[in-house]
Length: 424
Ligand SMILES: *Cc1c(COP(=O)(O)O)cnc(C)c1O
Image (cartoon, rainbow, N blue to C red; front, side, top):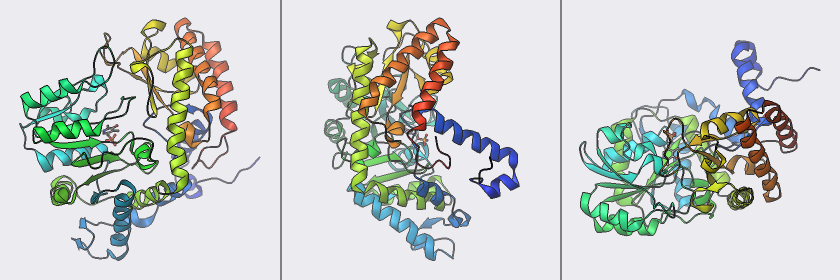
């Protein structure tokens, strides 16, 4: 059977690369993708990222460029900026950061000097590398002091955060993270930041789509700066934004360009504008709430099967499973689940006795499966698969993993993913 190729020019120019792209499309169609930072973008967002806008150099900002020929680019970037301001209710938006890490680095450049003290959640407790962790430039060039979560509740202890902030007087406080299954209390962070005269950066990379869709409280007006990626729950292209009050607009814009970056990626800017248009639609509110409902249903089904969840459950899109009681290390479980067509990542859990490269947990999330239309009724099925996969991992039962892979692919075929040129 001949099928029209989804990327004819690519296939003709480079069959080897086209085959790899095709294989990835197949993989994304057939598997249950549970990595909480991943998603499926719409076909329209994919098209926007593949436009000739990528041919343009546009250093500067709309109306203030260092290159001519910006008649259309200026309008595209302005569209993205205005939509970001509307969706998130902010006074200023910069849509040029290449990704989340450079966006955060720009915040350092804007509000601190090398050697200054900065504060963030520690990586093993759920924070991000760029919040001042040692191996990151942010922990090397700045004096990173770190808060964590309480041992008994696995939630942030605001007395600890306040005491640390009073003692260390950081220039910047970061809140948000990559493995935080609970609502972030932006108001509490804002109060502490104001008390110690620190700039509060709310890094909503993971939850931006939930914030946009009203399924997580907004950091406005508590945070001075909001940093976010655009490719996680927001379901846009790989990119990032920095948003702020008008008072910080100049400092942020100067830090992004010329402070840190050269020309903006205009094709990405276009796709961000489109993703924000999609995020402003009523259906995106439904999506954001469905992501959370799915995560809660999945958490409940996992608890019912004896899984130990960090903090006992979830308020958002993410569930962190501590596999200690299952006697299966996180990495072993993650690799076995991958063979079963269930894609997760191994992750440290708070106070993990194991090493970061071989930790006790796995991290899962519901943004991708919700984009494919799976609902809460299917979450017990997914919990069962995870249970069987983890048990099989412990026993080295490859037959069971292969059987699971077939069952997963069969279900996924019934829920075609956005953006994929092939049916499931
Ligand atoms: C993903 C993430 C980042 C980094 O984004 P990249 O685009 O991978 O550089 C920063 N902060 C948080 C909280 C994140 O989850």
